Length: 374
Image (cartoon, rainbow, N blue to C red):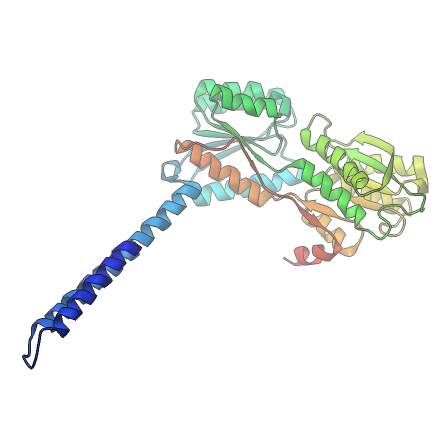
């Protein structure tokens, strides 16, 4: 476009010089006509530049997300591992709302009831119905291969969400040309942030000053990679921060608030004041642990710390008031929108990446008040 403008300006200068050197006292009417022509040429060039800018903007949009017009009105089947999970409730509600508003999609969401056999049957039903794309929050991440093969045989693209398959399975999609992708967050980051929240406290989790952080770990489902990474990396962050650690207690709470309360109560009864930090793999279990801590006469921030993951509204409120030390925002809005957009791209026949991740965000008392107000 710069070359076009340069050419136009050169022509204008030539026309102007010609008019100025037309000679002596002889008047001419050619100069005004030439000037008018030059102005018309300049205007045309400006219109061409504007048109080119619009084209470049359109090309930029296409490069960023591609044309998904073919996905308008698509039929989407969504499988959720269980409906009574707090985080996945927020996720599926946002997912459905976004798919319907942005793509005019027909969305059917089913409850796997935490039963993989039940969910596999649901996937087969969606395939029989001929949906355009499947969005899958599996009960067991280990079932990804079976479900991905079912989708491949049916020619239906699959977007796996929330529960990350192992790297070997994701690589298999590439090697075998399977139309599948994963959208989620890196659970290692969430675990690291939990550990950092403890490190950022005044005593770095060491209330009794013995140089060791004595902790309890309340896990989700140990088969779930999120539970594995959050468990590992929260403690790794403490160690990387120069703290020694002692695991007093570790049991699975299956992401459940009631189980979280029971397990925290057991740990508090068994270890008493020796227990300095309770890590929970999600906020539901942390909310339960909060109740157990208060029932045991302990005070978060004074003689014990408690952290979770998800940044549920209720938990953010607890962090703001100081009854939970911190949590980590698991961005259900960002993840659900990305899953929907990628599904639309796949339905439109576009090539997509095999993995999309959305960052977690640390939530402490300093930031929780603002989040709670929002």
